[in-house]
Image (cartoon, rainbow, N blue to C red):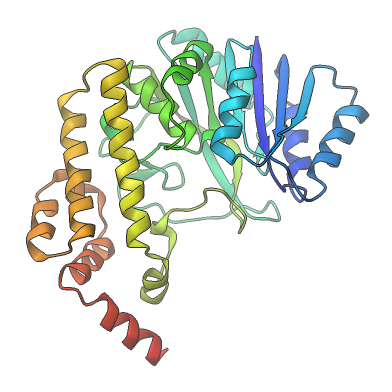
Length: 333
């Protein structure tokens, strides 16, 4: 049995295209469950009309009693899914018509997979392709970092996931038994899809399919869009960077790894090393200094993953020049 779960909130502009792309799959889902997080636009009306007009008796729609946020909304959706395979869907993307069929076929020959993450292509608000330059050792529209060349199907280590997820959650499908483990452990801090992948990796079952399965829409209302690596220009970097938020995010990643260790057994040594790197990064952001910068720089993950621009920015922080530079740049421009 195949389930699709869809979280919506104020998505009237794009929801119809997403629903159409699910309806037109070459392999149909057995159930589609949609929960709206108290939209104030026409999202709910559009969904109800779509279900009624297409006479979809295996599509189910509910509205939350109050706004809960996307993490809690997806947690509830996952708990309702009855399928052996559960696809996650956002409200504003467009699935390729063979997404379900292609990804389900991978499971048939690879029984160890618990979470399968597909590749994405980027589109804008008009459904036009967004072309971006891939960073060094970056794949999948700069979502996935790998020092090794990647193949058609790639096993993802927990140590890779502690720093970054591999793809947006709307490109993933999980087995029901992974959902069951997730429900026992998830605390709602780390994004749900990221934590699902971390559990799967802890159990040696997280994989990445190196082919696009959907068009991922980038627009101003994304809950999660492009990372800071997409922010170009020093002035934009100055305005974009929020040290306190960065500290909080890193601490959540560290805590999520600790929770995996507590709930599913000891993590491997490489994951411990990566977690130590994140702790050094938190220390640096809390107290920027040359000494703390050098401690962070000694970590292989920092040297491998941080681009030259990022290292220069960290040096600016280390010598505490960001306020002066921000003043001079903005005054001049």
